[in-house]
Image: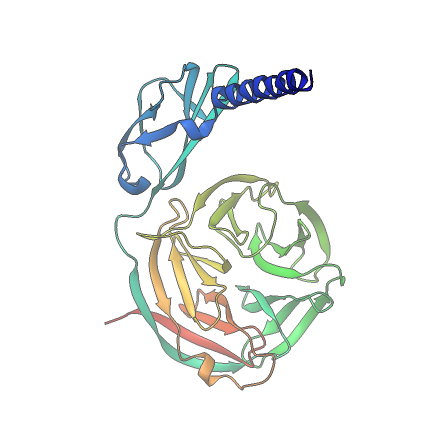
Length: 349
């Protein structure tokens, strides 16, 4: 009798295990499929025609399939790459009761490597060594500077020839000051992680307005042309903002011929191009970006300038670039640097 009970009990466990094994084997997931394209190593070229297919080695049933590129449904079995940057190809379908989503990223970089530039040092001026420089720009002959650090952020109007601070607004300790620029004769200053920008009267620093960021959650660099503001957020994205509403309109990805460039910091717009510091230690570099495409067309090597600055414990990275239109020169400095350098950018031999 005991043997019979034991046999029945073992049979129950065997049946339950068989059912579990059958369910496990019949479960279909994304790991059973692969989204394949004709793009080698998933790095394409502008104008490429991308063909794609779902690899289904076990011939699972597939139904209700749809494809999309960057969120837009594709009705053909191919897509044409018309923009630089990251492109997300997505396949959605059902296999049995399982909804399957497959994704494949295709990167499209610039066709040519950036040109390399150097600089000619024209003049050296004093700069406040207690200024953690974030934004720098000339307006009506005066140099304006935004400084950072919680509890020590400020907005300044400066006589660049002497380094004298003519006017200063200290930000509340809850704000970390970032990039600044001018649009429609108004001064615009970003904050870092506080998701807010401020709009001032540049003559007396009276607050006119404020605005919240959209998808660009952080504030880094800022510059402007006649029609747009350009903003970075620490990622590889260069955002375009409406100069009236400060709403985000679009973005491009900052890239070279072989990689994306993030941590793009202080910005300056000159003759259709954006000159930008990169926030990297031990590299005094400015990248020259085409704002409509995101392509880095040039890299300026500013090595050697930091060696001319007085050494102290808080000395930090190269940051701050401003163009003086009447002098046709650039002014550059760094965080806690005691010198402001006037330079000309020249092609490197």
